[in-house]
Amino acid sequence: MTPSSLNAPKSFAETASWLIGRVAYYVRLPAGEIAVDVPLADYGLDSVYAFSLSADMEDEFGVTADPTLLWDLETVTALAEYLVNGGGQE
Image 1: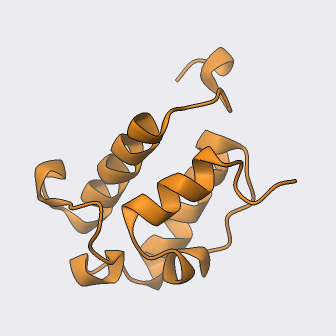
Image 2: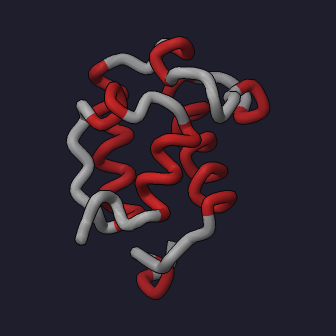
């Protein structure tokens, strides 16, 4: 990633694709097996990986992402919508 792409606005599709890639990496599944409407916990994403994914989201999107967010917004769709809408920032 280049510095100019950091925090650049991303579309819903780009954000969902990025999330799918990160989840697939952590749960060691092909990205094609990650459905956008299935709770991430169903794939075995545990608290350790939630911390890692939340840090990745902070780095990629420039938002504060508490690991518990993944339990509140438990699907790729919900997380992508949250991130595309500014991560709860006003």
